[in-house]
Image (tube, rainbow, N blue to C red; front, side, top):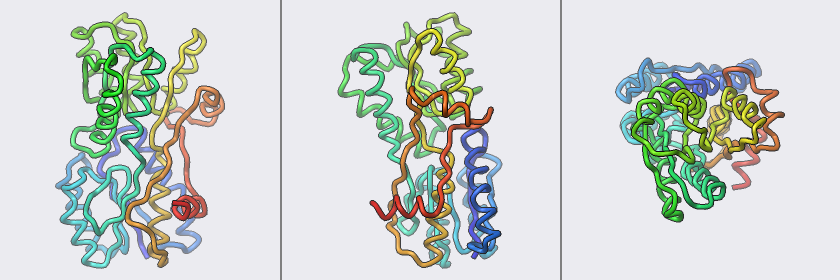
Length: 308
């Protein structure tokens, strides 16, 4: 049986690593005869209407399963329902679709936001000015991480978000947006992020001649290298995100569904956090332009799913 990956966006290092991880795992699976084919399809723009057309084409092309990184939690529901009615297994991950017939693989994105707030509260003694860098507007991941931050901030009235911009999970966009808002902001003590934006934020703050606040990072190699360099002066932070290899987790779940295994429609996978003590080791094995990553084997996925 053929499995397709429908991806809505590839404009940053996380998405590019995610696609590479998919290929790294699916190519051997095809050679072993576990699936007939597992190609990837990425829309030119982050447009739900374009992804709907893409999925319609995949149904017509006879794919037995479609793995979806969705442009919207709801805008694809109609075409996903069509796919299910045609006997196609649909599994969404990262950007989750809410159509009940689809399987959903997610990390606790609200926890990503809450972890950052808790870390900054501890480091700043529950008091300070924060800048929030959001992701792609309209995507469920952005909304979930933001909600986690907002809810957790209620515990710390001394922490104030004094500015917010959309960095689109991309270093260059984040740098430009932060540079634009900095002149309007007071002294910053911490920066809440979503991944793909920490290094750009640091560059914008440096270019503005401001002191470096505690910037939460998202496991990009350039961020980790920057952190390692800053540590020479005693700088510490944390780094966390969903691993790009979540695509491999989604592949094995889909492959097992096609093989007849019964699985729940709601499946949760782990986050990937880089601790200060393991920074050097992680950085040493993370290629330039890539991210700290975890690619899953079939046995690892089954162990996680069965344990839950």
